Every structure is written in structure tokens, then in C-alpha cells.
Length: 207
Image (cartoon, rainbow, N blue to C red):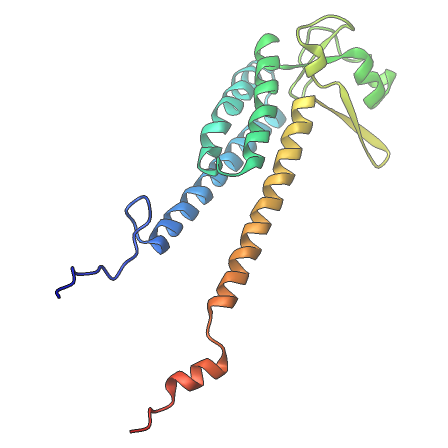
């Protein structure tokens, strides 16, 4: 009985050889991660170097809006969806406040002290940050603004609830990536022939 010809490649659901499909997937993920990092560096660079708040008001929401597109190749990871939730909260808050993240004066006082806080006027961009200073109980969606003080050593800085969610998502994403890498490494070791098996396979067959 004639058998139909069998391909030497095992095709995946996308029609590609599994090894080729895995290679393409890894490249897409690396590209997405690189784009996300580039957006983050652009945002930090503009915030640090901008002499006025206009550039920050443009670049900050633009980079946050583009981040999900950059991270889309990583969407099979739960951590990325957690990041999306945090980015959505930040994006909505920034849009509601003219392109900047609101921070109340009492939060600034708690973070850097009353003397430094007094140098900033309400309604103005705080140079070197993504924040616009608002009076207490004013501004839009201030509960989602930079309202959480994070202490590092003897100083502190303010973060938004969305920032905290993004950081949690990144930690989860790193854990997922580590787990997938270790699982793949174990699979490679288990699939590799032992020295005895290689020796037996190379031994001549007795006639």
C-alpha cells in the first residue's frame, strides 16, 4: 500500500515549522520590548531636558498611548495585561489634566518638604517631572494622580496608582519570562541524549 508523502517538517498552527515559528515569536517579542524601552527613554529624556511644559504635555500622553502597541507582541503574558491596566489609568488621568499628571500640594510637601514645595506655583508644571501642581481637592482624577509617596533611603518620590500597577505587571512579566525560560531549558536537557545513549547510537551494529 502506498503511503502519502510525509513532510520532513512538523507544521504549527501558523503553517511554519515549530522552530521557525518560535524564532519569529522571539524576534517579535524582542522588537516589542525594544520599542517599549525606546518610548520610555524618550519620555524620560524629554521630561529631563525640556525647558518648558509644552513638550512634556505632548510627549507624555503620546508615549503612553504608543506603549500598548509596542507591547502587543507580548500579549500572551498575563503581566502585559496588568501593565495595560496601569497605563490606561495613567493615560486617562493625564488627558483629564491637559497632558500632565496631577499632584496635590500636600503630596509635594510630604515628598520633598514644605520649603521646596513653596517654590512651585499651583497650576504650573513641576520642572523635571511629569506633574502639574494642583491645590488640594482641585484638579481632575487626583486620586489617580501622583498621590502615593514611595520612600527610598532618606528621600521620597510620588507615584500614581497606575504606576504601582505597571510595576506589578513588570514584576509579573519578569517572573513569567523566567519560568518559561527555565521550562524550556529543562525540556532541552530532557530531550538531549545522554552520553550512554550517544555511545550506544554510535556503536557499530554486530552482523
